[in-house]
Image 1 (cartoon, rainbow, N blue to C red):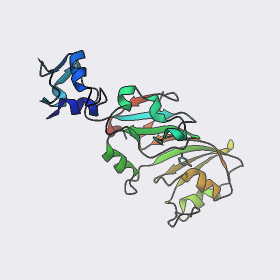
Image 2 (spheres, helix red, strand yellow; image 1 turned 90 degrees about the horizontal axis):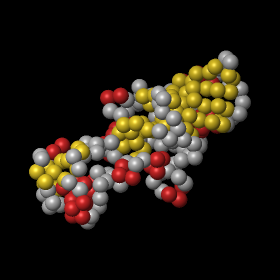
Image 3 (cartoon, protein in one colour; image 1 turned 90 degrees about the vertical axis):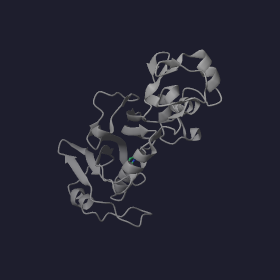
Image 4 (cartoon, rainbow, N blue to C red; image 1 turned 60 degrees about the vertical axis):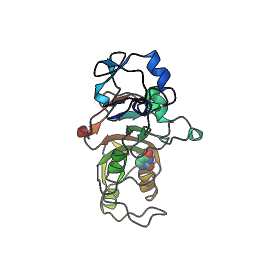
Length: 231
Ligand code: URA
C-alpha cells in the first residue's frame, strides 16, 4: 500500500503537490470507492482514474528503434534525447525512464529503456553477457584476418586495461564493407574503437539485436512495451 499522491507522482500523472487538485479534476477510485484525499493509501492494482487502471504501475520496459541524431543522455545540452520521443507522462515518471546501456548519437537501432533501476544494473553488468548484434559499414574492404583477431579476446583498445572479450565478426562476400559484430560487453564506443584498432573507420552503425530481441516492424522513432522474458 502506498500513498495515493506518491503513486500518482511516481507514475507521472502529476507532482505530489498537484495531487489534491488532480483528485478534484479526475474521478479517482480505490476498489470502486471514490477518493479525494491524497494521503489515502492504496495498492496500485486497485486504483482507477476516470475508469482506467493505472499506466504500467509495475514499471516500464520499452524497446525503441533509435533514430540517428538522438542521444541516450538525459542532458539536453547534448542534443535531442531519445526520451523526447516518449509520452509526457512517461517522461515524468520517478524513477525516470533511462536507457539500458547507450547507443551513440550517430548509431541507430535497438535500445531498451526502463524506469526499473535493477534492470539497468542487471543488463549493463559485465557479469550478464547478453549478446548484442551490430551491423556496421566501413571505409575499406574488410578482410577475413579480422575474424580471428576479434574472436581471440586479446584486442586491446586505446585507453583500456582489459582486452575486449571474444567477439564474433561476420563478413559478407557480396558486401566487403559491411560487417556484423556480436559483442557480449559494452565498452564506450566499443564497435567503432574495435574497428579503429585495425585501422578501419566505421561509417554507419546500427544495433540489430539485443539478446533474443529484434526490432521487427518498428520504424525509427517507434517503440513498444515489452516483457523482460522477451530478452
Ligand atoms: N559501439 C559503438 O561504437 N557505438 C555504439 O553506439 C554502440 C557500440
